[in-house]
Image 1: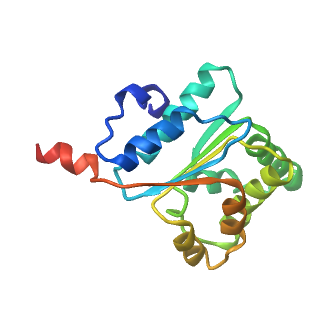
Image 2: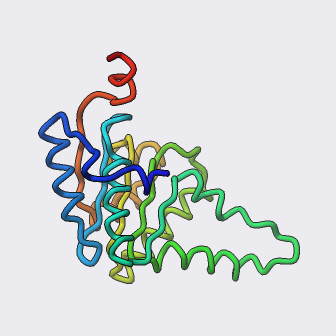
Length: 179
């Protein structure tokens, strides 16, 4: 639904920061850029991220998009009749090798060593293989993300990799329902 409905031409920026974020997402080049879009709920982070992803899909790039909490569930592997290490590695390759990876809503998941480890490994593998094309959305600033996770290793890598854009404004869902 998001890939079909979230298009650049449907995004209506209300603030200068939203206009700036729109321009950055329209110009997103997965060969050289990683983005971290953050701000309050309903300011258009996911809309812009999925619109940027949609553009790359139209250019026939290999893309993956997943909500952060869904990502963690992908790595819960039933140990019955499965080579857990092999299965984990295969799942990890999907997220580390794609040309464009969108991880939406980072920081909403319940924090555990397992979830932090998965996210860290994906980010670290992309960094160490010089793979750009990462788009992350979050309600949390990078400093708040470090506090939430109780660890700054992931945040440190993201600071090294990403261009950060704060998107301000009102939650469009509330605004729509009050009109």
